[in-house]
Image 1 (tube, rainbow, N blue to C red):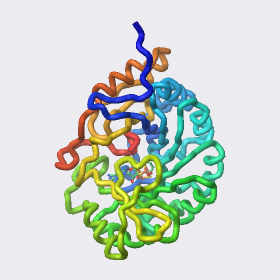
Image 2: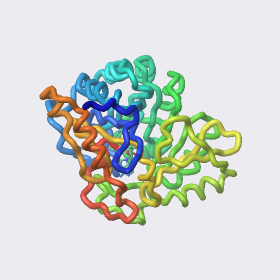
Image 3: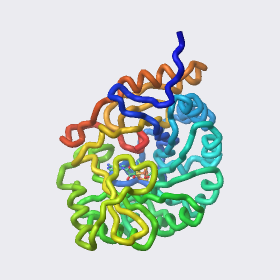
Image 4: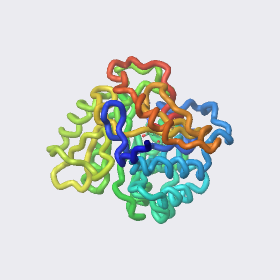
Length: 331
Ligand code: SAM
Ligand code: SF4
C-alpha cells in the first residue's frame, strides 16, 4: 500500500523541515581569516560538482515533499557563472515559495538587478567591517568591497529583506559594533551579529576570541533604547531581533556559541558535490548525487537522512574539533 505524501516533512524529533541551503561552489574570491586558508582549500573536481540542472532536479523531487524555501550559498555563489540561470530554474519549480542568496557582496553592484529579474527574493550580505583597509585585512583580498554600496544596489533592485551578517571578533572588528548598528537607523537593513565559531581555519579558537552576543547587545543598547522586534518576515531562523525606536532596520544576534537553537532547527543542507547534510556541525551526510546520476528516486534517501538528523550540536561546550570550513559545507 502506498501512503500519500505528507506536505510537511518532519525529522525524528518532530521538527518541521522546509528549508534547504544549497552550496553551489566550494570556491571563493575572498579568503576570510576565519573561513579559508590563504592558499585556498583542496577544491572539488568539476565533475563532482552538481550541475545546475542536477540541483534543480533535486529540488524538483524534494519540493512536493514539503521543501518550500531555498538559500544559495557556498563558498561564494556569485563567482559561479550564470547564477541567474539557476535562480530562474528554481523559480519555475512548483512549491518553491522563497529563494534567498548568501554572498560576500563583492559582485552585487553588477549582479543585483539580473538576480532580481531571475526571481531572487532575499539576500544576506556578509560584511565584517565598514572600513576599506579592514575589509582587506579580514578578507585577505582587495576586491574593492563596500557594504553600503552593495546593500544599496540590492535595495534598488528591489531585493528584500536585506540582511547583513557580521562575524564579531575580539580585537579585530568589535569596535565597529556601534557603527553597524547605526546603519539600521538610516536603512531598512537587518544587521545580525554572529558569534565566531571554531570551524575551518579556527580549530584552535578559544573563548578569548569570541564576543558573546550578550556583550554585543549591551554595546548596542548603550547607544539607544532597544525594543524587541519580530525581525524581517520569513527566514527568522536562529536570530533574535531588536530595533531602535523608529528605526527602519533591525538588529539581530546569532548565538551558536552561547545559546542553542537546535530545537527550532528547520533546515538541511546540500553540499556542492551533492551530499545532504542534516546538521551544519558534525559529519552526518547522505550522498544524493550518485543516486541522481543513476536515475534513482531521491525521496527514500531524503527521508533516511531526516530520520537520522541529530538532536543538537556541541558548540556550546566548544567540544567540536576538526570541523570543516563553512565554505566547504555551505554555511
Ligand atoms: N561566501 C558567502 C558569505 O560569505 O556570505 C556564503 C558562504 S559563508 C561560508 C556563510 C557565512 O558563514 C558567512 O556569513 C560567514 O561570515 C560565516 N562564517 C564562516 N566561517 C565562520 C566562522 N568561523 N564563524 C562564524 N561565522 C562564519
Ligand atoms: Fe568566502 Fe564567505 Fe568563507 Fe569569506 S566567509 S572566505 S566570503 S565563503
